[in-house]
Image (tube, rainbow, N blue to C red; front, top):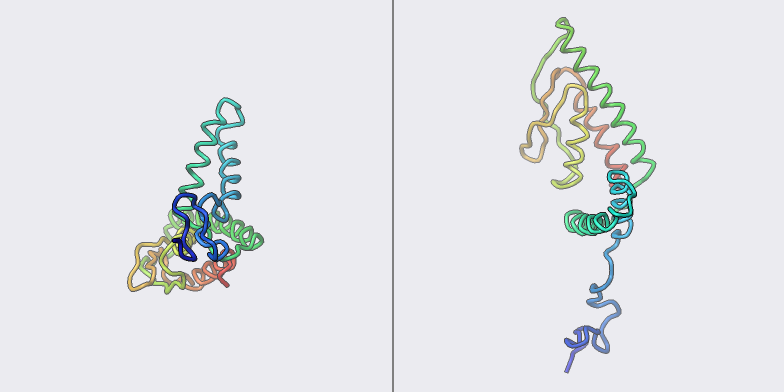
Length: 183
């Protein structure tokens, strides 16, 4: 006899009286799988081209990449803001250009003051993907690079500790938080 909530071992069908959707994970695509697969297919086509002879390999690669993507980064409950992501991308591009120009200027003009040192920043993101994205983005700030972590705070090496590094980091964290839907 099968009790409510169990599956009939022979058929895989939920027993009578089981809650709707109970154990109904077999045969159902995880949320976000289709959109990820589409983006990965587009990426494949950009890289490899649309040669029909390559499509079987592309389909296999997309399926494997989608599976790995969903295992490594399951679909979350937060809604990402497309406008905030676009703003973040533009900000990242701008900060990259400014950082490159600032470091080149400091390297080529010996009269500019360099006061290298370390600054700690109490990041609000928990350890994981968002914090890793934050440290990647902030590595583009002029004259700073994440150098480690201590007691939940990220340590940054700076070319000039007299610059407003902590306020720049706070602005970057707020922009990323908006883009990820954490605000």
